[in-house]
Image (cartoon, rainbow over all chains, first blue to last red; front, side):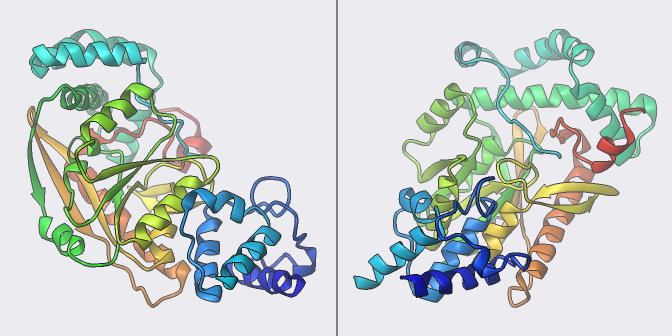
Length: 86
Length: 299
């Protein structure tokens, strides 16, 4: 899991051009959106959806789950793990 | 920042009564009543007077007297357009013609989803939703803060159609819904001239000055390199509208940033074309241009 989290941090940083943010500064449990935590803008979620599809072959099937899946880097990693098993 | 709180004027009780009146009254009677008794009062009390005047004076380049007259005409037209919207809820119909319909039909016949970008000029609601396809569901992004009566009327009108309303939401659920719809090969319609929700924006030259446009609509289309059409619906006479459909080309092989730049430039070109043809149908009543914020309100 930790390897996947680190991998995700690097890919998110690349996809969103977060040059000023070092992957080690990413707290895996910090909220990705909103003022607390990483502070991504809501529009950035589109890039994360595409990243999930492109890098891990996982398509978000239920839009209602989106907010919970993209809450933190750890929740994304957990979703990837769950869906890789299927 | 030119974001907009966005909701139809009036309370739900007023909306219900307006629909009841319109079931039995010719719209022209209401047009005349509003033009004589409501708009002059509105012009004396509302902030929109100065905003519209500055738009005609600075952006369209009209003289002082003509700008003042066009400010009145603009407000009368806005009232007519709101009346027409409620007349549609009351079951009345309008004559609608479409320019470049084949562009819409072509994309509607393809497997891939596509995006329609609308603007707050003319009256998108009255005819924009008529651009429907039997094969593809039409998803329209609407402001979640809109009055319940307007949303109920929309739902009732579109109950038997292939139209789905996606309301903007602070929890981003609308973005997941939009992406899902596009992945499923559906049509998604988004207004691209008002910043609402995400504060990310692009500053572009529009009618001779810098203005901020939301990044979201352009990001949605280019994330999956989808085809995009600009769709605007302009009032051409008392009972008729014309839908303008224009393909917005951009190089899908270029970088994301460049795709967004090209797409937004194409959108602006089409918006400028229509504003030049119908200058009185510009209904963004807030400081749209950055210069309005910087220079104050004189002239």
